[in-house]
Length: 342
Image (cartoon, rainbow, N blue to C red; front, top):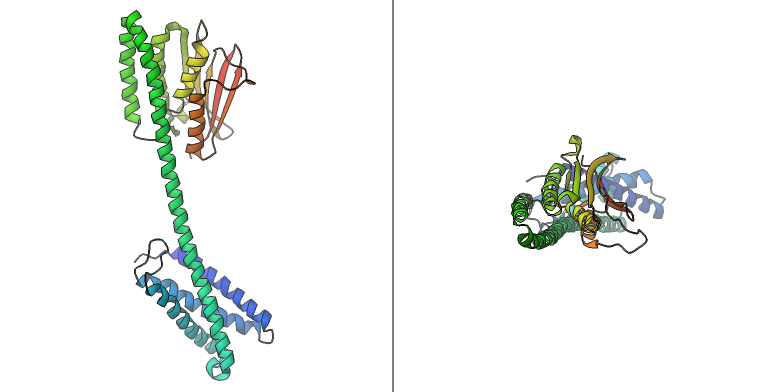
């Protein structure tokens, strides 16, 4: 039997606080009785009820949801604990003050004392029962939310992979008829990229240096198709290489830069992917010198950017932020602001 002593201490302090509240209420209605006497009896009875019930429940099989004994034991234990706590608490208090409650007080006083103990003991026991059940359900809810987030991230990854792959295969089909040598080079790079992607697909996140390595494979693949029209720079400081990020986080942004920025521009342009620290955050920057767009117009090329926004919200629970800047004719910059891993 494993006992959580921190949890026991928390229950003890809560019971003592509740007992003090009961004694204060009693004194408010019966000020003719000294508060010290009421307080000592309340604390002593509360202590023995807590000890009887909270330790006694470990002697019986308990439900996972509440940590409370199953079946009849769940009813008998608090009743027995209240009776035992009242008896031991009264005897201990009598010994402290040097009198006997059963002989000195009348039957009405004894009945009232028993009633208060029964109501107060039942209330605090029910409170702990409900609290444990609520804590269990909350833990299950958090666990279910984590599983749902992981599943959602995996679903987004499966949507991104075919999107990139279909675009690449369409380009490959054109090259086969026009430039077989470049088509062969592109096919080799597709195999290398997919092999790297498959190796990383078993996890929802990986070090930033792995993300940059996959970007390098992807950009080399695109360079086969675009030739000198595509130039790129990858800038990853060594101290940020091991920062954890969701897989395939940057690739759709780079794909957007190529598709909506550089391809429509006759002379092509440059793509820069950079990682840096800024105001205690990890900032990932994807910039291009493409055609840009009007920031006042509705956002175009939204598939990749929408997926990145959704993945950021899912992976970082609202702590991530996406910023997009653009000037027509001068290019576009997307900034991802992520919390730094400790």
